[in-house]
Amino acid sequence: MTRHAYFATCAPGLEPLLHAEVRKLRLARVEQQVGGVYFEGVAEDAWRANLWLRSAIRLLQRVARFPAADERALYEGVRALDWSRWLRPDGALRVSAQCSDSVLSHSRFVEQRAKDAIVDQFRARVGSRPDVERDEPDLALHVHLWRDRCTLSLDSSGRSLHKRGWRVFQGRAPLSETLAAALVELSEWDGRAPLVDPFCGSGTLLIEAALRQEGAAVGALGAPFGFERWLGHDAAGYARVKAAALAQRERPAKRILLGLDVDPASLEGARANAAAAGLDGRIRFELGDAREFAPQRGWNAVVLTNPPYGHRVGERAEDEGESAARPGDTSIEALEDLYRSFGTQLKKHCAGYGVHLLSGERRLSSALGLAPRRKLRLVNGALPCHLLSFDIR
Image (cartoon, rainbow, N blue to C red; front, side):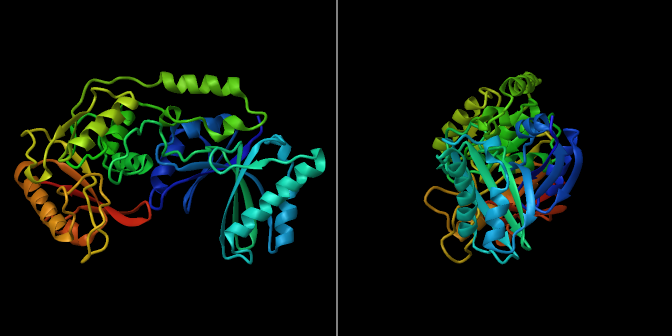
């Protein structure tokens, strides 16, 4: 099989975690870079990466690199590749572009010229051309321009890898599945201690934790990957790899996974999400208020949660957490009261617990009245945030 260069993308701050994930797959020439992880391998390696990586967003397969300081160089560089290797003349194409420190700085223009080059090649050869399809293309091309050098990559994932296929209920402002999986890993939860989310919302954190505990290949749960629509794809070979990945999922000894929320509709949605992920009955979702959080003594549990937080202090706060602070009241003052009460409950009832909390606002996390032992800078969507870790004594 032909060897290719690949780049797995991730959210800012998660590169070290993704690097460790890629190394566990025993791939070649693994290198952590800004925005993701580089490795080399054959098609089967890309299949496995798409199936198994939990914190990656997309897996790009590099197909060309060339200087592109002007429009003509870009057009000719794209047209120089034989696009019939991957795409039928009547297929559907999507082009995306990212430009930085380059003469060609307008991403829409770059996308258009790259698309023109591919379309013109097909028209000249066979008299017909691919259509443009943004939602479900047969081939998705990513053009990256940096310092007048162009890298062309095929999006082997097709869909964002956070789309696991189990989310049937959205909720207020759910974490992405990839960030949730990363938070589970960063919490250092061993899979045996009780895991509690007092602001569970749609259940994302607990569902990703349970999937990790079962050894599930999370990519196998979602829609087909982009590479499955490429010409020349070895469907039989991939089917064997996917079947082997699915067979590795096991139901371990039952552990305590507990989600609490003040909103009954969110709890119903969380149960529906868990069932869609094949986790029906594995997670307890119960009505409960974090301001009255008083778990069973002696649990020595791990608390992992994404409470609501406002990112416009002094105005009406925009709820960015999974859970509601208090129905109808998301002012910054109400959120401060919520954090203060939650911190009090942790100090009173959770000695010996490890607590990990995603926070997007310092004023709110300070209201907990706890000093974090670790603070990791991350990004939740477009919002800068921190994962704060506390040891409750």
